[in-house]
Image 1 (tube, rainbow, N blue to C red):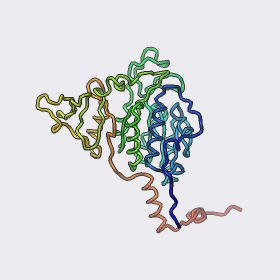
Image 2: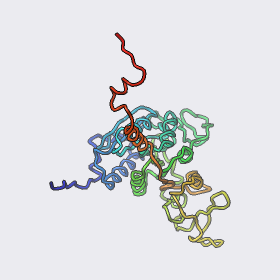
Image 3: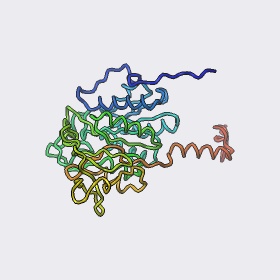
Image 4: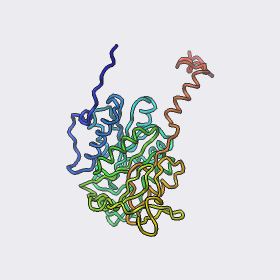
Length: 340
C-alpha cells in the first residue's frame, strides 16, 4: 500500500470559521497568530490537538482554533486539561488561561498541575488586570495599582508567575511579549517539544482596562535595553548595542557594561536552561526593571518523568499480576454480598 502524502499545514489551516471577537489592538490577536504559526511548523495533525480554556478574554481561544477544544469553567482548566491528557496521551494538549483565571480561583489547580508535571502546554496571558469583568485588579497587579476594586491602590503584593512555577517544582518556564510574534512562535515550539508541563507567560496588553501596562519594557524604543532574550548555551548579553551583560556577584545577579572593568563576552554568565538546580532560574525569572532587564525566552527547561506517563506505566505493570481484568472482576472482588 502506497503511503499517504500529507500536505504541510499552514497557519491558515488552524484558523476556525468563527469571528475573532477580541477588542481591536488587543494583544490576544498576536498570541493567536503565533500559536497558529507554531503549530504549522510542528506538523502535528489537527485531530491530535486540543485547546482547553477557563474563563476570561483569553479563554475564547478554543473557538478560534480549527482543532479540538473545550471552553471550561473559571479556574478549572488545569484540572480538565490534566484529565484530557491522561485519558488521551497521544493528544497535544494546550491550556489557555489568564492571570486571574490561573492564579486566583484556579491557583490551587495551577500549582498542582505544575508539580505533577502533566505533559500539557500552558499559555498564561498576563495583562495584570481582569479584562472580561471590566477592570478589577488581579493577582499580578502591582502593589498600589488603582482599579475599580482598588480605588485607592491595591495593598496586596503581586504574584510573580515565574517564581510560582519554580516554587511548584516546575521544569519549563518561558516568557515572551505578545507583540514579538517571532520570539513567541519559537517559544511555543520549544514548549510543545518539552515533555512535561510547560508554562509560557505572555506579557499581554489590554487596550481597554490596562493599556500600556508593559510599555516600559515592551515599547519598541526601549525593549532592547530593558529586556534580555535568553538562549540556552549563549552568554547573557543584551542592549541595543549588545554592550551589557549579566554576571553573578556573590549570590546576586549584576548588570555590567562590556568593555569596562575587564568585562567581555568571555566572562559573562552563559545561560543553562537545563540546570536542575532552580536557583539561577528563580533569579532570572524574578528580574525587574529598572535594576535588571526583564528576562524573555526559555528560562528553564529541565527533563523529568511526567505524571501521565507514570500513571499509564503503573496501570500496565499492575495489569500483569492483577486478578482484576474487567469491571465485573472488580465488583465481585473483596467483600461482596447479594441483596434479595
